[in-house]
Image (tube, rainbow, N blue to C red; front, top):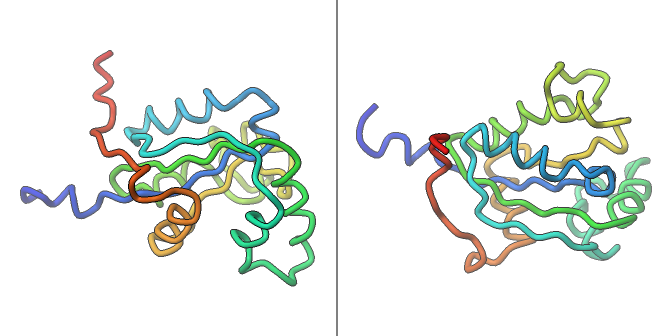
Amino acid sequence: EQPGEEQKHMQTTLVIIKPNGVQGGIIGEIIARYEKARLSIAALRIRNITREEADGFYAEHRGKGFFTELVDFMTSGPVVLLALRGEKAVEAVRQMNGATNPKNAQPGTIRFDFAPSMGENVVHSSDSPESAAREVAYWFKDSELVNYPAASHLL
């Protein structure tokens, strides 16, 4: 690769560890998987989100049958909001998370290993670089994002 080639593939993406992941005590396990994949944490916050925030975040799904259930679930307990940075981060995270429906997820993916159902599938992640930019900005100000190289795994 040419110098700077890797930099143009660097992306920041959003992950939300949903209430069942937080309450299930698997925050560390999930984050460790991302870090092992050489993704760095650009921002991290744990908090309860409001109905208004969930409604706005999932606005594209408003009017769909599962919308109210989704908002109810996402506001049922604390979530972890993560901005992850790395090479082709959007695609990398989506592969690690597995199919939205855990029944269709590959063994070893986060949803295969931890998600009880499609409605409670443990993690949300951005589905494109465009949605990643919008979603990261929804939860974090630019000034809250830090930039550092991913772990070297020499520890």
